[in-house]
Image (spheres, rainbow, N blue to C red):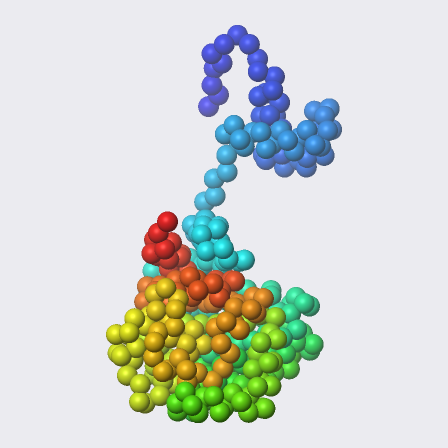
Length: 323
C-alpha cells in the first residue's frame, strides 16, 4: 500500500535512492544499466545502494531453513577467530546429528580437495569422517596424497583410519599412505622408544607436512576411542575425574583445552597438539550436546581453523563461551 507524503516538498535524494533500489533489487537491472537509465554513474549507483541500506530503505529478509546457520557461521567465526565455519541445520532427531555434520563435511571436502594448492591432506578416524566420505562426489586429483594421521587400532571397522584414508583416496583418484603404528604405547617410556625409530619419525614428518587435516572428536563416554583404542589398563572414569572432557587425536583435554595430568597423554604415538596447531588448515567436524565441552576445549586451545557443526551445537558453544 502506498503512503501519503506528510510535507509539501520532495526529497530528491531519497527518491533517487528508492528508484535505484527498485531498479536493481526488484527489476533486476545491473548497476551499469541503472546508471544509464537515470543518467548517472555506476559508482553513484553503488554508493546509492549502500546509502539505502544504511537508512533502512533497503532491507534484506532471508526466509530459509539455512538462515540461522548462516548467522551462526558469522558469529562463530568472529567469536573464535576461525578461518571458516560450516554450520548445517540441526535435525529434529538428535541421533541424526552425526549424519548431518558428516554431510556438511563431505560437501566441504569435495570443494577443498579440488584446490590445486592442497597436495597432502591428512585424515583422522571416527564415525563422522567415515560418513563424510559417503557424501562426497568423486574428483580427479592424482597429484594429491591422502595421509592417515593417527595410529590404528587392531579392530577392523569402517571407522578405522586405514579404511577411511583408502576410501577418500579412491574418491579422489589420489595416492595414500598410512600411519602404521598403534595409537597408544604401553607406557611413556615405550612411547619415546617408538617415536625415536626412523620409520616413525619419517611418518610423523609426513603428517606435519600436510596442507590440511580433518579431525573428529567426542567425549569420554560415547567415544570410539574409549570403545576401540583406549588401553585396557586405563579406566575412562579416571580421565573424567581428572577433568577430561574428550580427546583430540588421542590427547585427552580438560575444559580449557589443556592436556590433563595423566600418563595417557605421554603414551600417544602421533603428532603433538603443538605440531597440529602449525598445520595451515585444521578442520574439526563434530556435533551434538555431549561434544560441546571438547569442541570448546579445542577452540580454546587454538588448534582449529575450520569448524563443521550443526546449529544447536554452534549455539551451545557460543553460550558456553560467554563473553
